[in-house]
Length: 348
Figure 1 (cartoon, rainbow, N blue to C red):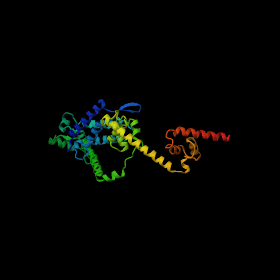
Figure 2: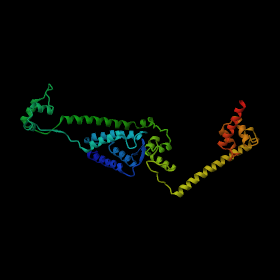
Figure 3: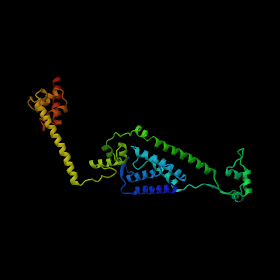
């Protein structure tokens, strides 16, 4: 059973991590609303999760009920912050207010409120039997202060410490809230598959490149894209992008990295050569009008294809294998523009 002391110690440890995060030079700094902002680090985020994991079960000492329920409210704000696409990377105001509430419960151990003894109230405080009955909340069958019970206690000399009725009501209300929490936990355990299959994650439409350019923290990108955080960091490393305020260190030395790039480039070049050969082969085998090879030169072929309502992209694809140096977007566009001018002049 988790006691209040154990949980309060865990809270104190996380609070120290929060203070360290505020001054840690390794804390990622990102741009948010035109200002540099210290983003929640992986280290601090992990500490938050570990703290709440320790109190997820129902086996908690009643003294710690209020502290644990404050932690529940706080982790809800943490989850909302993690799922948000526009929240301050350093944590929302609601998150930090909830954390301050947790600290309040963790700094003062709950102690039962006791009432002064009847002899003390009569001799020192000079309270009347009616006043004492009100303090003890003793009432007769008519709902009035039960002075007879007070006089009987005075005569018997009974002066045992008495727990405050207000404290008893507070404990009862807390126990009812705790029972409701326990019921919710049981419900979640009974229907895990239903939750998983019915609630599909919403994937953010922005690309990884766009999110990295916007300096969104890797943890937040991972949640937005429903992928592992390490995948985001690896991708940033691969494209040479900054993530969490720094460039991820390479996983291979410079020579290995250069070799990998060259290999990838060679594969692309080989694929381009194969494609070019296939196009040339198709053009050489075809003797129909689509090849336009019977025309005199490059310019005439472009003009004829344009007359046949071929698009600029189709012209480029058809003539690039035959004229790899001449056939370029700018060249085709100039010839087609000249044709448009000729048509316009003939219509005047």
